[in-house]
Image 1: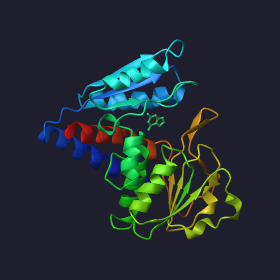
Image 2: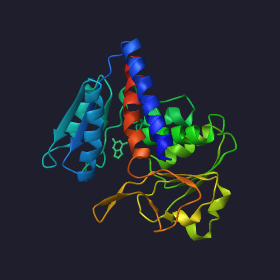
Image 3: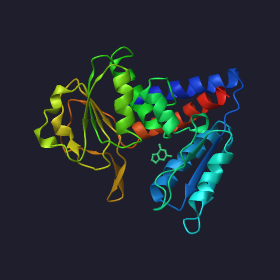
Length: 268
Ligand code: GUN
C-alpha cells in the first residue's frame, strides 16, 4: 500500500507542477492558525513546506488564542481574494468563517458543500479527494459504480462529504457513527472500508479479508507514536490492503491543498 501512495503522490505532484508552469497559474495560499494546537502545527508546517519547495507564496497568519475574536477571523475571510484556510480545531468560541467557494481551498463552506450535494464538480475537501484518489489507484478508475463502501465517522470534513461524493459516483454507501452497533456488522461484505472516527482501535486488522481496501484516515498520538484509527495486532499481517499511518491519507491530503489551490487560482 505504501508503494501505491508514493506513486500516487509523485504522479500528482508532477502533474500539478507541470500545470502550474505550463499555464503560468499564480498559485498562492493563506493559512490562518489560532493558538498553538500541537497537531495543527505539524499539519500546517507540511503545507507551508510543500508550497516553499515549489517556490509558491504561502502566507501563514498566526493569531494568539488570547484576544482573537470571531470578528478578526470574519475580517480575514472578507478580505481574502485568493485561497485561504482556517486550520481546525479553532479554540472554543471561534468558528471558521463560511467562505465563498472561490477562495474555499478546504471545500468546507456551505457554497462548496452545496455544489458537492448537487454534483457540480466542486473543490472536494482535501481528505475526501485523498480517499477518492486511493480508491481509484487501488480499485481502478471505473470501479465506483456499485462499489460497496463503509464509512465510519460522520464528520463535516470527511465522513459526510465523502459519503456524498461516493453517492454521486453511484457507489453503495453505508454510513456508521458512534451510535452504530459496530460489533454486529459483517465487515467482510464491503469492498472498501474508510475509518474516520478519530479513535484508535475503532476496528483492527484481524477483521478484514483479502481483496478489501481499508482506508485509515485517523491520526492519533498514542504513547508518543502516531497511529491511525485501526489497531494493528502484533504478529498479525492483514490479508487486506490497509493505508499506513503516517505516510498514507495525510500525505495525500496535504498535496490536495495544493491541488485545490491550483484549481481555484486557475479559474480566477
Ligand atoms: N484540521 C485537520 N484537518 C484539516 C483540514 O483538512 N483542513 C483544515 N482547515 N483544518 C484541518
